[in-house]
Image 1 (cartoon, helix red, strand yellow):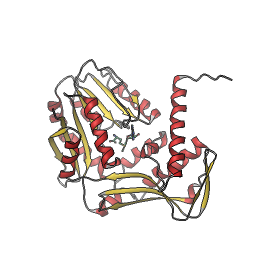
Image 2: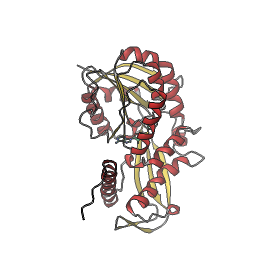
Image 3: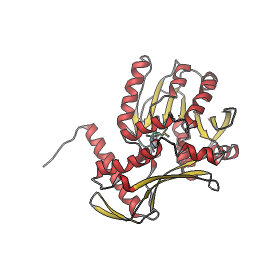
Image 4: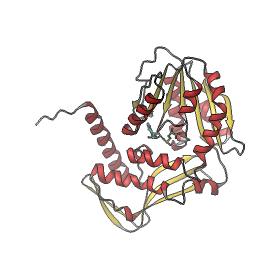
Length: 322
Ligand SMILES: C[S@@+](CC[C@H](N)C(=O)[O-])C[C@H]1O[C@@H](n2cnc3c(N)ncnc32)[C@H](O)[C@@H]1O
């Protein structure tokens, strides 16, 4: 029988097939790993928003404070009439600081992998900014060759906040930024939010909150596999595992099997030893030299850097090097 699917259903079927293939490959390899983008189904996106509100998660509060202070200068640097292109836009909460400071934007293009969350966010923005052209793009920003929206030649200002760059391994971060450099063009600039190296205890606490929200975010991936791939993960049999590796300069996040067990995923069987882990996420932390090297390697120059007084977080304005 030929079943024809509506475009949104086709898109969701494509998302699910990609998720299945990535999970089966990730669980078959050694060491086991599943890419962080899969943490963000609709529930994962909600849990990430809850993480941003946690007392231990200084990142969102600090970056918001920095952006509040520098939004007017960012608007001046970017100039009038540009198109704001956000990578991994989530709920676009911090974006509103830029939207308020740049009332004459040609368009706002939020790019995110989390389809339902992106559509809901775009709806709220259209309601709150009726004069703004909002053009959501559901895509993997690591695979985007060009901007799939016509912004009529407007200069492009990229926005990549939230320390999302830290989820990328160094080579991936460079290749992402090179791609962004191409996509934003020679007149383009990029506002990048970067978490800075600091006291390991502070970092550890930020990813091991006392309310268990970060743990719920990691373990939601198991729920997603159960729901979308017919997997048989027992949520009680796995734990969130996160700590800071000072040598690599990164938080490492895993889910860990609490006892020996066998799990079926999309019809395939996987055995877990007690203590066996599946990697889900890194969060790399940077210092000034690391940020400068990253920018240089991708064809950007650093025009301005803003930090908070305690130097927990940095917002960097990068311009395309010609
Ligand atoms: C750490 S959250 C940051 C959200 C928001 N920008 C902020 O600063 O609060 C990462 C966001 O990027 C999205 N994301 C993660 N990997 C992605 C990918 N490869 N392509 C597109 N979006 C991605 C997630 O769905 C999520 O909304």
